[in-house]
Length: 114
Length: 113
Image (cartoon, rainbow over all chains, first blue to last red; front, side):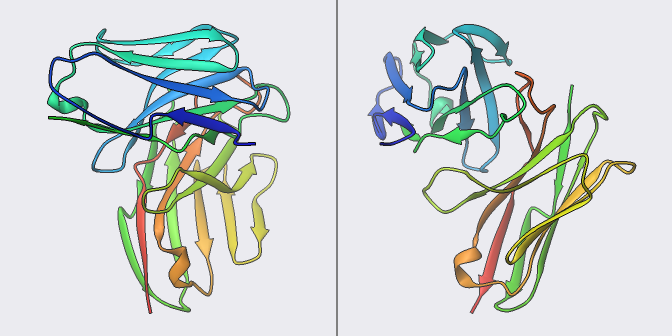
């Protein structure tokens, strides 16, 4: 009954590889997000999808490509991984509307690029 | 866009003392201000939030105050316990919209036994 789940939890890979992180929410929310949290703990928004449509794309290299096959899923694909991509990536979801805006976070994916 | 500043970046208190974390925001249209707690190795989780139509909200040992005129809001934790040690994030957004939450930079709170 996990609300927001991510896989994998840990990802160790070599520079130059391509990898994907998957996210699923079973809360029926209409908006999903990807955040990057670096070693200084700052939560940086990367992407936001509302009803499968991209609504926010912060200054993120185009090596990062989000894909939302449906409202419950938002996957993150990363091409040509670089050392600086090492971080914890959090998926989150929320529901727009009068009762919404609380964001529920997934458990995070710790990405280490060697 | 919205800009949220959070202070201090680190805070150490003795167990039983109070802790206060302060945030300021820039967009006067923002009307929803949540606080998230992130324990080491865990996900951020909402601990309390406040809407712009109230000035203060309490939940047991934690409280949040909001000053709309000055555009700042604060988190107060009383009778701190070691399990309160975590990183705390403030955030701001326009409630009900698809606008993102803008987070502060976080405060590492350490409660010393």
